[in-house]
Length: 358
Image (cartoon, rainbow, N blue to C red; front, side, top):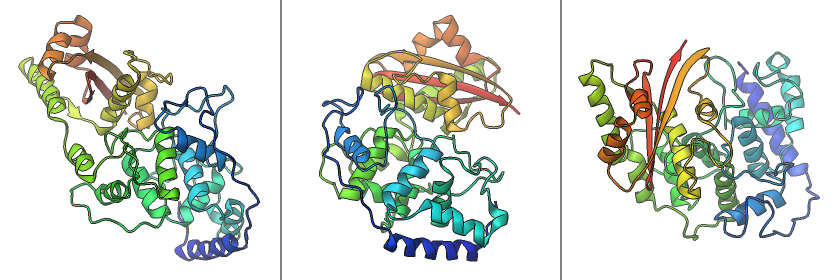
């Protein structure tokens, strides 16, 4: 999508004016400790969830659940961030003025239909340079947003001073900023991992209310040390699998951050729930988790499989158990696969294997 920069600037100025003119009539609601079947007194982010719901930034589902472990897609993320960071900005005004100034730019993206519930939030996010489209001129509203992407948007949306993060990855200054602000939930294990609904609630609650002293927060050193390079045990698993493949004359499996994110989502879920299963506690199967990362985008055909393990031993022990199992061995050594992502959280191991046929 192409929108003239002057158009965006004009609409942005009008949104600032409309924010001053808007008067909120919503009264804060009293926060209840338990508001959903799956967010009880023991949930680490229960206060943040209650806060977000009370202010109307997030809602639950008809079945009485909040689904705290469900990943957030770009459409939902746009809505939550815009309403939380720009509560006095009218998305309807944005839509009206954008269409007046540049009627040829509506709809903004072919996959953001006019009249869709998230269209006005995409408009505001676009005007404030929070989110953009992809090279194919789409917005991909159903694509899951990861922690690295979300960190950049939140830092920009809340006007935070950017930290001087040292690192080769583009996201380090943004994640560094959130870590130093005490806004990075401890459940976040990697910048490539899915951002869950509960984690988004916790981050925005902390940013809006200036909460920095809760114990469930990483130190900057710990977070970036963990994010700087793969866990030694995880790297060992990559090496073990590719070594055996080489001995058999097979091509090595390439590292995939998207498959790693799909693996990490399940490993983290198993660690938190104790549910050793290929289906996560919120009902996501392998294909759904991988699809959410964008790995399967534009791929009409694909191959996927997954190995699970649970042991207190090393990566060598897990590998030995897998290689001795016909099904797990087939997954690791199949010539059908080209990519791999591995995650280890506590005693739980997940390896996802995949290939795309474009």
